[in-house]
Amino acid sequence: MVSLEEVPGTDEAKLSDDYFWTMYDDQTPGMKDWVTISNPGNKSVYYEITVGGQDPGPGSSGIIGAGASVAPDFPGKKGGPIELRAWTDDSKSAAAKVIAFQRVLSNSGRAFNEVLGMPAGDLTGDYLWTRYDQNGSGFADWVLVANPSASDDVYYQIKVTGSVQATGSIGPGQNVAPAFPGLIGGPVEVRSCSAAFDEYGNCPGAAPKIIASQRSLIGPSFEEVPGYPATALSTAYNWAWYDEQSPGSLDWLMIVNPCETPVTYQVKISGVLQATSVSNPGTIPAHGQVTASFPREMGGPVELTSSGGAVIASQRVLWNGYFNEVLGTVLN
Image 1: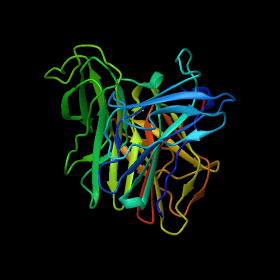
Image 2: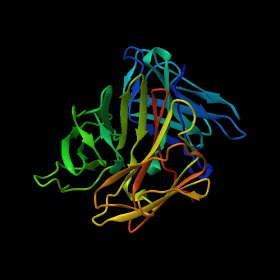
Image 3: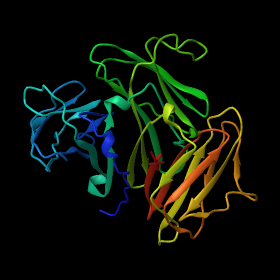
């Protein structure tokens, strides 16, 4: 295995007893998929996994000892959403907080990807990503949207660079994965509605909670990035490390301005302000984006701040042809 993968740490205060992912796939050729669950507590916990609201097979429920972990997989299974629940006892009388993530080997074991579970309490009806790209050579990109409801349909809308690309409905416990060949741009936005979107793209009802992620095949690698809740956008993001010095490494920040007016931004690496334009700080026009890179820089932490409005930002890395993307972390 020669791929690169970076996963942000989980805030202990945000651990949950109920996590979601958009899709499980141990059926597509070259894919291997499993859910890893760790118990940070000092007592055993009980867990249960469903895929598309159904029992996916042996290993879908069990016990995790104190300070231990399990990694069940379901050969031949494909579907979504995935839900993990955890309790303190087998009667399911009290919730138990665990750490959970989905791990995928693709390209017949040559590429690795890991995605932390989305706590049920953080689900929303409006998600964003920095960019969509199914125009570059060797690029394939699609947006997954899953409906966690056990009883109600949900309607969805996908926009790229402000233009509606897809709308439709998703049944209870089902998902969709539309792709847009030849399209490149950003930001990407997924919204939900309890009724069909009107001819102007407006939601005439409520915005039910959904799960959404973006999956990309770039060269030999597979990458999945959970949607960023629109309500959580910030003026300050952080990453652990920047590296455009190691052999085979290319590193850049994608910064998108969803506001109606321009914003300014600046980037620091290891506390040193970087040149973001001819004059510093740099400027991003309304609904615009920039790709900021700093040749030969290496170090951390990386800090991005904006003025004039909140932005969405991710760090993208190509390492010896393998691709990785990490959304910025908001401290506190």
